[in-house]
Image 1: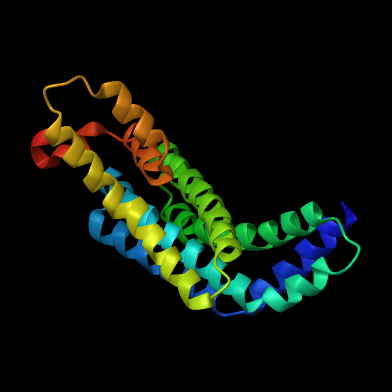
Image 2: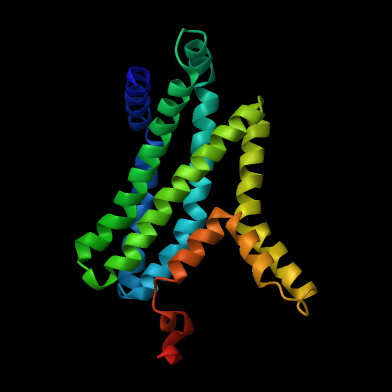
Length: 222
């Protein structure tokens, strides 16, 4: 536990020292503020931000985590050579990356809604924030996996981008192709199982279940 605390404290200080996380938080703040002002602050704003969270958060978490781990490879190898528990070391490293990324989502997306005081959207906004935090955690873990599998930085970054494309774009395309090809067969259960394997799809379904369905249908939805 002492090792986790020391590594976590060092990683948090090291990550927060850089400008990348600040830029990420400011971008989320500006995007959220712009969507609220242009969308009127209603359910439409939450739906628009859903796409931002489901696409931008996984990309930033993957790339930021992967690049940070490659940059800190020598430091991590030095720590691994010391008589410390490896599980505690990796828990501290993971927390030092996942916590700042999650905090950036909470501040960047949550603060504008809090500033504009929209109590009627407390439920959808809360689910949006939880989804953003969970995606940050999941894709930070995937960044660790990429950095461990690929020793070369260029290959690792390429794999991270490809993984993001597969999860956010290609996966849904494959599902649509399966539905179109086997539309005469009962596909509800297989599609449900396939959806469970994609964290982005899970987040999308969770968000759509919490918003007013009429907002998805435009002005005729009422």
